[in-house]
Image (cartoon, rainbow, N blue to C red):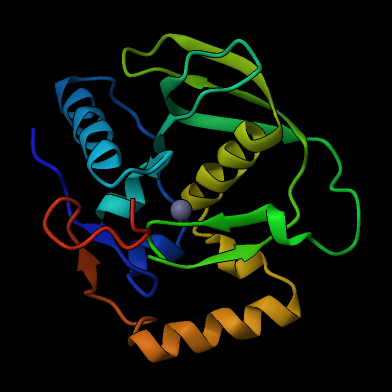
Length: 189
Ligand code: ZN
């Protein structure tokens, strides 16, 4: 299964709601395998289907956690319930990054707790709770399925910085990708 190019902010599929998966078939499982491979090659902790150019409600994650949840998994057609976000301004150590906004990170407040429901690649129900960084990861990936990037959620100060970075890199238009394992790792891993 091949590593897929990762779409960069500006690609349409990243900015619109992804469609529900209707068939739990070989094609879906092959997509999921590609997503795991791409995530690993990119040294990421999560990849959503729109990030490899596919507008479907699927994401994979790879993250150790304190919640007793397998450190690698896939969610198809997930739903998310979150606790309230507390505190006004994010701390510097709450920085988030995204493979589709490569090489950058900005502080963002997130909920400390989420409950995730969805399906695995075979259509079996999956349900768990997540806290801390794992909860952040779930919120970030789930956002991707609704066409939202974390940079869309930044406070004014960081949003301005992110906009500047995007402009300097020529992002914000369709057709831009990078290839994990071929292009240099944007986060220097
Ligand atoms: Zn992302």
